[in-house]
Image 1 (cartoon, rainbow, N blue to C red):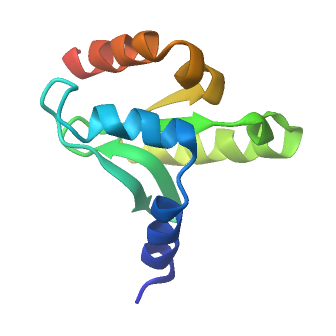
Image 2: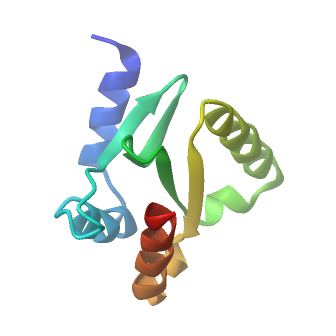
Length: 113
């Protein structure tokens, strides 16, 4: 089996609390009746969430994403995904923990564009 698919399965089984919190909203078609997948391989990357119908990727970042090395990696990753036609939304774990309503509103706004 493809290594990316195996890694995606492992990531799904080891989701962060913030990923699970957002997934509970996304998976129940509560977001504009759009279907989302989680830990989904695209090219050499595995994205946290994707709505393929609307070409929307949602990433949830923890503090480890705030290092110079990871900032550069995330920038290149986002450039690649955008070059494939996706829009990438990034939220911090603290956004999910402290402002899930604002996160939800932002996602709805993008889905309605």
